[in-house]
Length: 426
Ligand SMILES: [Zn+2]
Image 1: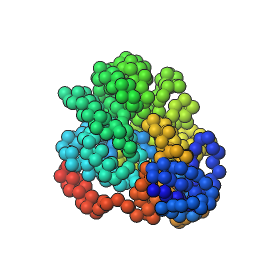
Image 2: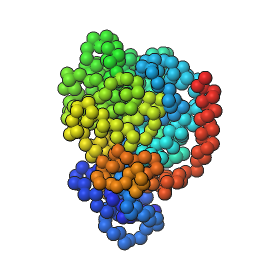
Image 3: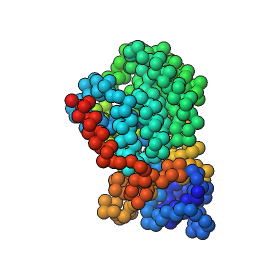
Image 4: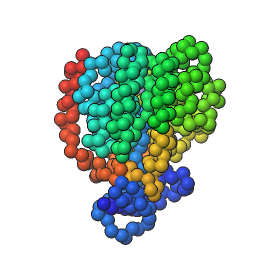
């Protein structure tokens, strides 16, 4: 099946090529980008007209918990610890597999409608979440959330191993090993997670240095800087995604330097829970920076465009310097840098020949985004869900002309979430 996206202004995010924002036609053969050309005249089974619209890689959300859609707007006036202990963990303990399935489906819908094509998901009951991903044909990285602060640590590792074996060859699914954090996992367990990830050749995804209290806890537990503690349990041998990293010390940063490590910035979540602001401008010199929304409970929503705008504004604000960040760098953080962090840089994150067709079309002709004096700046700061015209993942069109092409009843799904809310959020 050959699909051609014609006449759009293409932002490739291809690092080898200086962006010219030219009008390009993109020829897609099944799931792969075959040709980038001007005025394509060949055969096509489907032609998508992108005239006067922006065509760009789908966004990559590198830290989220897809099953947390139920927890939207639960974070007011709570610290991270209070929020987890009062609002999250007691309710999660009562969630069934079916609840996680519908909550995941809801998050997937929210992501699609805001132009995200791949997410890195850390949660429990992963198999039902994988079913939701298979049903909706979106790309996702999975990791059963691993912790051993109860007697189920080994069970969780067994669940992960079985899922890995069962789904490792699926085109849209890949895996990471995800110990929840250093404060919910023992040293021995973290070492086991590190070894497991090395043996499967997959990255590790962990919450790290989310706020000052966590840093204090790790320092007390290990009697050393948190980065040295990562090293102590073997995790600096792994390809790593450190979610949050709001306050990594300069000493720690020097140790992380040049290793295969990404910081996943989650600014909205950190602001909501008063965790601080990661100094991305400083980290950027040494580490790969990617972007996450976290779950809706702390991150408000899954709209990566909204989160991108905050990334840019925050850095300019905290450094009192408009040069500390620019819109193109922010767009990299949400696309190609995310692909690197997930180890999927050969497949996604940019529009290049040979890569998978994970592409979105953004309509910039609405009142909120017109005129477009600077396309990248406009895309980063003014894109709302109404601007998302088309979403394609692995060559499949999931949203076209703003219309969801999946066999999913949105109203029925909302009813399901309403029923869960009434039952669980008492
Ligand atoms: Zn998180």
